[in-house]
Image (cartoon, rainbow, N blue to C red; front, side, top):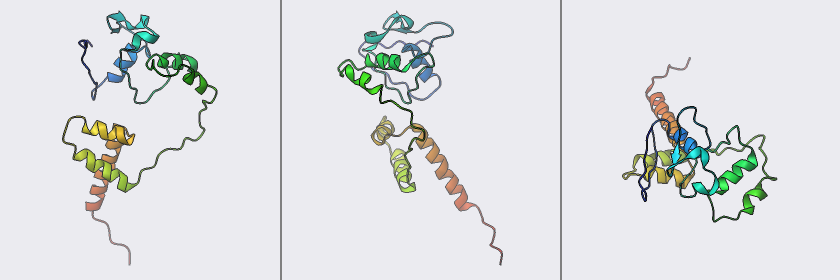
Length: 165
């Protein structure tokens, strides 16, 4: 894949295949098995820290690469936020614990219906992305909820056998 982003422009990668892999390769979260990735004209494998400041990187679901330890990941991410307090990530390390049973958000049918209605009514480019961002949702939520809505419609029109008398 070849992608050149002219200076002063903004690109967003949406849909399609390999976008996450491409970003992870350029940001050094994955190592290429073949070829190379360049960022700002330099081999990305040779870049680190502040060299990535001009790159806008917003992860959807951040997973730590298997080869990276926790402190290394925090050091790596600190470079993306040069204006934040450098002590803050370090202060998070001792308190970082994996919760045995994470509390997942639960969505009512009414909420799901409202979000689907808003997504279906979106009339301009980026409206659905703005909705998902505002609500803290992922596109996978929409896909799952649309599937549930479709199944409910099918179930509503499926004849039911009469109850035994």
